[in-house]
Length: 196
Image (cartoon, rainbow, N blue to C red; front, top):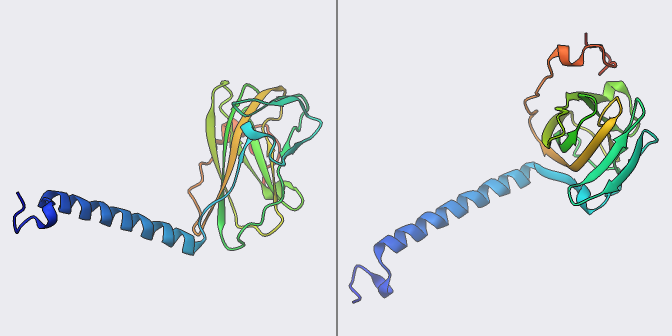
């Protein structure tokens, strides 16, 4: 039966629930609009299960192939690397690169950035070389246009697979997961300094 407190046959509980969902969706839209206004979000995403996506390897990478899990490879030289296509980065925003990878090679990875590569424009990160999938978040400084990323997944021989690489931009610097010095002791010079 329709009463005066239930216009058009809708219960008050249904109306309250509808209002709640509408407010929740509206709040979500405001968050997305705020991020868009700040220019934050995913700038690039390379899914290697779909191919190399414009990335190339050097002679230190052999037997590479694309599988359903991603880009699998054998690293043989002391400086194997994968280099990505040029990307136009917002010049006033910080960057976070996330890599999903598994490895049984060396426990040290390194990512370079720039139109040319140098140790001063690179960041090292510690790899869990247990052969299982892990994600690594590497914060980078603001960059410009035509910048390439270079991933050195190891500095010694072994097997590596990279599922994907994601690049996000942020107005504010992200917390940096610093590696413990002992894990980098005896490794190559990073950012103009030497660990160990």
